[in-house]
Image (tube, rainbow, N blue to C red):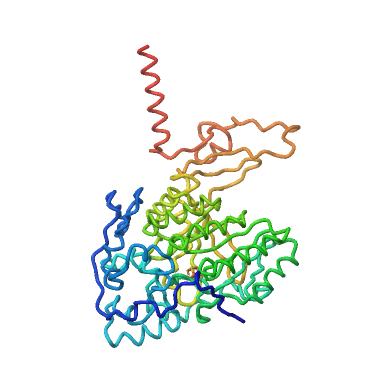
Length: 489
Ligand code: SF4
């Protein structure tokens, strides 16, 4: 695979020589949880404090973080808010990891081998979200390398979705009938420890060569059924803005390409990268949709909100694709809070992915029943706009398979028996093609000896309602209230 780095001085992050990371002594970096936005009391969910977004972001928030103040004692507010400074100061060396984890000398070689196998890089911003007093902190688990990544190397595949097999030209995955996935870079702002494409990390931080990008464009041009191109990586928003603009523009010129889509985690891990210029450039290529990946409500910060807001104001819909991660978001409380937080910032919860069986990721994987349980306890209990579709990406390139609880229970003649989220069981007449000439079978053949679903099937009842149903309790209360009012007027 041919790669070359395409750079442009004023857009690329400053070179690594500008980072201060290596200059820091490997002192133990510990701490107190940083303060919240100061407006609302933090909500505690499974040991994690979650700060609701304030209307005004706290300009000095980052200064409260002990690690940040030790690693970058002289950083100014302007530097902190500059994505170039953030990118250039990404934490990525063994010394810093050792200091953050307070490693003993004998542990260092093992961690060194770990990050040689699966490199790491964390933006100061994302690092500042970690609560170091909580070893189970969900942000920490997503970005700090864990020895389990190499200990569980025997489990999983490098490429379980067989993306490489479906690449028609280097980097272009043609799997579905009307859309393709263009993997145009393997550079990310932060390397998620649960990444499905860990296999490409060993190639270093590069983007596809102009020749490869051109070959992708030509393939799409020559394939008239391609109505949508998903541009991903790595993270395409870490690329030179001019190269990305050119690539999107070439795709946009193809008459059968109706829609472009960007896959990026930048709004979550480096929100300051969403500048007005970047949003303006992306807006030129509409209809363009953007999918990001918030996995925990802690990540929905004022900065992330501002980034999403810039995109939305530029006319770019933002959707979210979470990954179901053990110990991070595998509970209905966390997932519901995440989806509510996303809805508040106008980001649509779109998918909840079962974590793929990738080498080095096994410790994040949950049973698929966990995903179904989460959907079971969200669907109906909260608005449909807050409920993502739970999907398993099938091994062997089978694509996404949606999974959900069973709602269809049975079929009898032309009726179907279904249940709702409350456990209420109903019979539903399923309209038939010839209904207009064959009248519907009348209900009412039941008798008092019938019980259970027989009451539905024979027609003596329309629904079976669990006891203690709050909705029916409300109805009863309302009816008795009306009765009382009727008696007194
Ligand atoms: S941003 Fe996406 S591609 Fe990059 S490491 Fe995270 S999951 Fe993988």
